[in-house]
Image 1: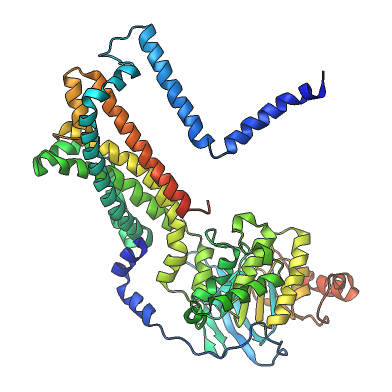
Image 2: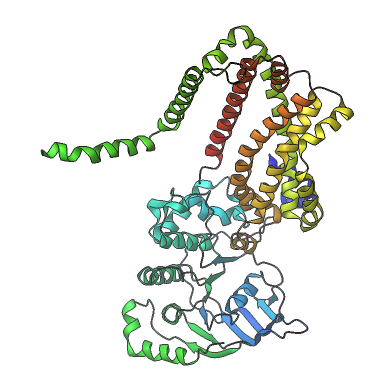
Length: 298
Length: 267
């Protein structure tokens, strides 16, 4: 009642738009379909990207001359000292941070406003406390087309889809629990499910496991790897944890101190699926120290 | 010492703590303190033979129900309606203004200082003015109830909207949600606990407002009964009216607590 009272007054035109909103036609595909091979088609392209918070009396260049390409189904990580602008790069992809120099293109189109086909997970799981786990996971379907139009008629279909996804992260028995009844790791898993439920083309992860303990974090790597292998969605991870970056990624980019550029591009050619034992091989250690040498303080 | 004796004290403590967690404790304990209060009150007035026109004993106050019960009930009804009328008006306008202040920076900067300045004015001081503008009767009482209840509602709604986590909004923005959808899925539910917290304060404030106005500019309502009774030195009747007021206030507060528990189930 109260919502409507206020909003009809202030946003009448928007509500009309909203009511008439055109559904975007999209082919139906079975969820968690068979993985496609990592393509050579570029999905995201950064060209001479810079970020500049300079004021008249204080120059402050955060990012300079970042140019890189991310392929279809590639898993990419950004590592670097804190404050080097990793999160800003992620926000550029999501369209949440449009004020920068250069261009970021999604399938050849410059990103100017939020893309609708991305899933995001932050360090803080930000589940809605008034919704139980399954309703939190269903949230994107209430917003993203074409699911939004179909949600009411095919609710049971979507619910079983969400249950299946929760099952893959071991949360099936917790679907009716509220966030405060879940542990930190469980909340983060639910948050990942929410990021993936609408079958996004791009998955953006901003230090998703930074707040978890070391053992839970390793379990989460494994879980995320399985999810990624099943969905094959292009993923961009920002992290401080070099082992995490190596374990999960096809390509790791190391960013330098401010003003920050890409100082190293490392292709991780470990076979998949990767196991925790691989973290103890010489090859892994070699890559780890290579990454570590390139990280300098601001 | 036998084993059973040894175990008994901790068991006794466990029964008290389990009782505190049980559903009944919520109304049993306050009832006990209420009864105790009246018993002590009765004893004190009798032991020190306090004259009735200074502090009447509870038994004397309750004895007034027979001759004055109908009058008090009728006027309590008037006060209740005045209060609810002012309260509902405050609810609607408070929510509306709270939303504008919370969502629009322009509204925030232009209206908020005025609101604070206005809230600093003692509302009692406005009652004589209102009785000049609107005459003696219900309207000044409704307006005073409204003015007192309005501020906490508006401020809390604005705070509720302003404290939505940015990341929560980012999740929705990145999915391409419209401003209305963000409000519907995040802003509104996030504000509900703040709204209910303010409603509990506002309903008591509304009662204070209407009774103040009734004592100054009215010819009906509990405030008017208290004023008349005091000027006739019928102190037991004044106390009976106060009692009626306390009961109404507590009941309405309870209504909001119940509504809050149903609607804000996640806290």
